[in-house]
Length: 326
Image 1 (cartoon, rainbow, N blue to C red):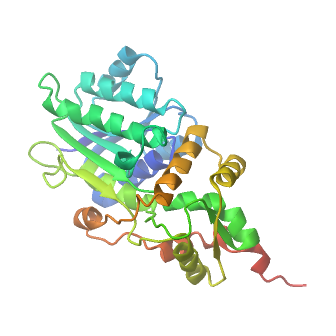
Image 2: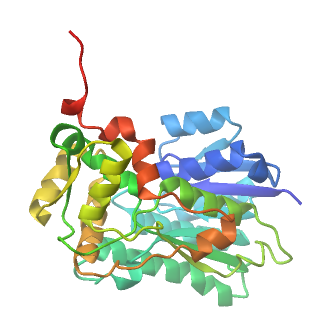
Image 3: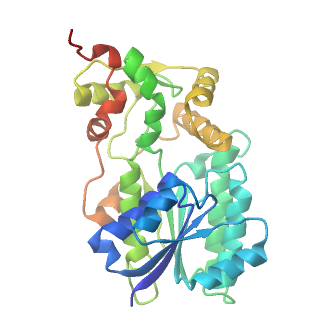
């Protein structure tokens, strides 16, 4: 039976990419009957592109749970991908959405969470830690016999998106540097957003006797990139990919905050999330990789850092090294 899928936060990059992949890849599109995108900003470019691909875009109006339940029931979706939006009220919006999903009785629920949330200090990294609260709300429905929600749950904890490194493209182009506040020796394993979308697409379109594919149903999936890298090792990967020298610069938290304020066109809460994740890296709490689930689900290998930098060579290549003609 074809699946009717709702993807939330499709006005953001993650939700948009997941919905786009499912709509355009025959491996996934043949398994669903329709894609409905829930969006806080239904008129943005991401939503317009999804509409052209055949998605139905529904405005997300948080603040009235009863109306949210009505909206979800009206979709007649049997599956939902819950993506906390890039918004200063992320926690409240998402918890309302989880509660509305439960009352609407949507059986198959995939939550996109954050790797490292379980290691975050509630006082020092509150934006990261709030994902634990959201996960708990989703998982608690498993034991609630009054609703179909929770019957077929999956939680995906995605690691640091490699695309966040694009925020430092100006420094890479003009100075040949990657400025990150992660310390000189600690490591992390950035993952390409496209790889997260692949795993989500496999989960959301997988079918089993009880909802999601039995290989995925009930899983807590942690995703990181395939290479555990320090700042210097990331810079080396960039140098190899771009064929130009690139250096890592270990900057202070204060400078990192100034850089994000100047260069990141996103909500302040998302900037704080990045700063908190850098704190985890500097504290040595991200010295691991988690790729087994990716291999098992997709039967592919996640993108290596060198391939990531090659993909975005135009954005990272130092402008001052480019040849000019008279």
